[in-house]
Amino acid sequence: VVQVYCEPLTRAGEKFGTVIVHRDITKEYEVDVMKSEFVSTVSHELRTPLASVLGFTELMLNKELKPERQRKYLTTIYQEAKRLTALINDFLDVQRMEAGKQTYDKKYDDLVPLIMNIIETYQVNNPSHTIHCDIQTSNTMVLGDKDKIGQVFNNLISNAIKYSPDGGDILINVFEEGPNLNVSVKDQGLGIPEDAIHKLFTKFYRVDNSDRRRIGGTGLGLAIVKEIMKAHEGDVFVQSVLKEGSTFTVSFPLVIGGNLQDDKPHDQE
Ligand code: ADP
Image (cartoon, rainbow, N blue to C red):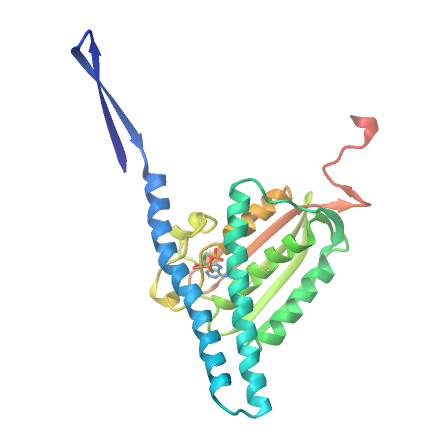
């Protein structure tokens, strides 16, 4: 997509030429298209949980219900309200990250208990999937913001579940590779078309095909993962085979003996 801008050149009221500027605005155009898709996705994503909250509240107000039924409805209302909060937090996070205003409270921490806690929660709520975890190193410390790193694994594991609609195994590996501590999340789900791979971490981007049209989302999760990993001097990579599954790998700088691996000892500086 090219934007053309023409400016007549005049000297003493006389036109003696024209400046023509061609600007490639393909990127801006793509972002615009994604933004308008995003607005309709967001309205849908906000409406769905709100409709449940309203519907179940109305039922509870208008009917005499047995305590177990009340509890069931209240649980749904609670979960849907939590979904709405998470959604709004994602929007705010992306905005803050873009404005460079996101703050990170970094401390040395062990990744394993953090990952195990998240796995446990997802396993309890998703019995149709089996989540395995293989810790292949004892160097599992990172320098990071625990909440934000938790958000990375939440996004990756929830995607692994969401995009494996027929269930299946999810394998989480924690391993060292060179100066990095890596965590991979592998699923046996829908996989990702090759031409979509390079766009996955762009905000608002969602793969559009018939397999996943009914799966909800905003296209923000992986953009947030990318930003958080960048803020931890790390990165995120993906390998995927369509209809076989995907593996998302995040890498952190390795910490050994309380020092970042990249830190040089003082006498070598
Ligand atoms: P959302 O899930 O809200 O759409 P994300 O940024 O988390 O947004 O993901 C972007 C897109 O990448 C998704 O729409 C989905 O098509 C694809 N995707 C992400 N994770 C997976 C996965 N594990 N398997 C297959 N496709 C995935």
